[in-house]
Length: 254
Ligand code: SF4
Image (cartoon, rainbow, N blue to C red; front, side, top):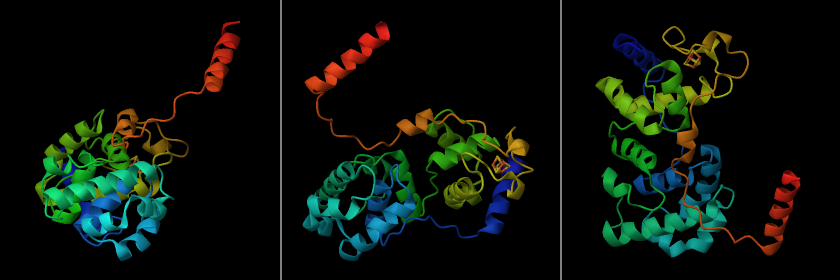
């Protein structure tokens, strides 16, 4: 995409939605951090459902520690990977209390040392809680960046670096939200809604006019690997499981 097209793209996003907001509910930087950690591989809707009652009683790391891991698990058990996420939230709350005076640090490197916090989560917190012009690349932004030609890249980091270079300064603060909302509601993964797309004439996606069926795939492999909460090791295979696998191998070989 040429600079003039990029400028026009964001001019339209801004005209349509001058003050875009994220869709995760939060009360302060700490609850935002918790909500973003919980949202890995989960929908914002599912996270909001779980955090609504949780944030009524927990709004600081100290309150989270007082709640404890077991009771936290009960609040978030409808969210995928809740065991790992509960452990991470308790551990990060402990670090915030012990090393940061109970505050969320406004520092990417420090944020990224917290359990369950990767570059994307740090970028979201810096952008929303501290109004820094960071652009967190999630699955939607990765897709929109590649499809439109705005910021092609094979990995989320490549797309992020490209966005850093090409998004005009005046639009950087809100670029994250505009691109996510565009990807979530218009430039959807399976069937982009090109006929009602605000930037259809600027978009360079070759399949855009044929978008009545599934769209051409985008290289998402790298993104899927990113920001998966570290899973606890599962139970070792039982003798029965091993025997079953062995029978399958034998059947294939015969
Ligand atoms: S024209 Fe279609 S593919 Fe291009 S940004 Fe719009 S919805 Fe996405």
